Image (cartoon, rainbow, N blue to C red; front, side, top):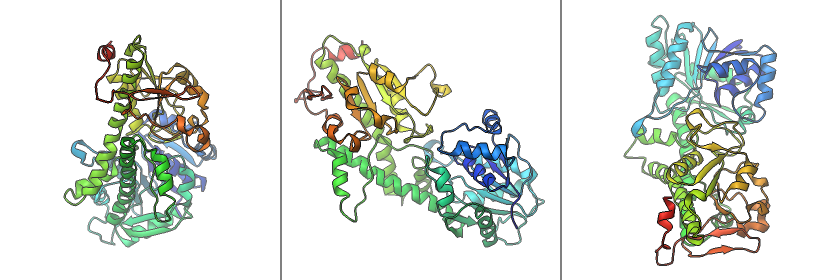
Length: 470
């Protein structure tokens, strides 16, 4: 039986593209979100997030009459839940949003409905969702005990898309579908076949949950290895990007690239769901999380060492004279998502810890989030580079890759992304990260300085500490 009407609960970075994709197949879709502003924006045929090609998809779906948004759920044949799943203190999973979604849709559920949890979730979350629904609607039969004699099917189908490529990957990627029963899985496959050309692989709910967590934990461990390499290379004055490029020439080696940390609502969060479920066994996963969580603090200290070096070599300046441009605030390139962003964490910490003027550059947002307005200034890229004494490259946005070396004359650079390798190969030596173990400030033939801080014996020039506080 084909689906004529579905409802997507949560219209964020996953929910809205999913809703639009179903609507593009001429299925009536009602998207539900508690954010009235987002609902109004979508109903105007516009989008409130940054995602390539999504604007055209939503516009066509809304104007074609197949997609509309609301703050209130209404009856449908299938309900897809795509809400946040953060963690609480001590990295315990927080399922409050899933529980709220269950309570919201329960009154409108009918016999024959399908409920799919798309949110990346800890092991057992789909079972918990089923129990919440059964508690709210005792008049309906749910597969709480795995019984095939259910009147509402429930399954887990985790999203597996990459921000910036969501529209394409929603269609092309394989989907792992874990039903509470085989019938639940099969009904879910029928739904996703509306637009998915990748394979729909059936398993049980718990395995589907663990599969998504495993994918993200695997990437987190890989990034932790790269980030740890970057620390080792810095200690030995080795270009980590050159090192990785050389190592990856081995046919069985595929090292990821380092950065300022790990962010987003998946890789920076999901491994903790595994750790919380098996704290004694998940030793490497926990270690990787700690390595990646510590990387922003390492970057912050690097910037402080650069500042120290400037003040040491320019006795007439105080810290208040120095301007720091933090290039990129999103958690990855070419998106506007600031959730769990190490770049934002670094910018906020520098702004709070240093007496310098610190501003952020994020080409994918027009204003700072409400909690940062009046705290961290947002500037345009060219203006920020012109004003800055220290440029901290935190995100490899496409706009930043167009920056020419001559724009950086006389400035200090801390490049956590290796942005200027490749296309700027000729200027490679100008863009290596600061090595703070040396005691001089070297200026290359182009006038771009790679500052190094601290005397060889670890002492500092007289008066630097005082000027750091001025």
